Image (cartoon, rainbow, N blue to C red; front, side, top):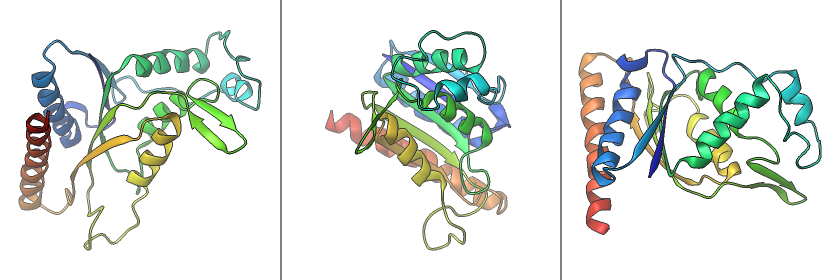
Length: 209
């Protein structure tokens, strides 16, 4: 069992999204004690934006045309895709930035969503080339992201579902802390509720299994 843990908050270990994703990992390690975890901390080792060679290789070339990669972001893309392919489970800890994913997570997505490697173009649209597997997303937002109290559109969850679904990853589970900029009382309640939601999810899964 291989688990890929991606953390995207610039606050690193001090972020609530990192701690919440760590709580998810703790449950997964209990269920899979022999699991190996690959850490991908986007906050400490930020990814370079895709470069010209990457863009040229993906600009409508035939399948297999970009297999022989040289230095640059195409080689990094190969590395990140191989890491993703080896993972049986994904855990993503991330905040919401400006209604959607932060730039660090978007850079990772741009590297792993790649035509002829993880996405196959067809006349009917793009088809994912990766087998589905569970993806657990621990997400924090300063305001309300969902429900009747939300006052802004949420592009975060629909985007992640669409773009990861495009490579074949459709089994997404979201655990959310919302209203994190609304004072200490709200922060404490959000932490309690989100951790309890994780506990319930895995307790139910263990009973079902």
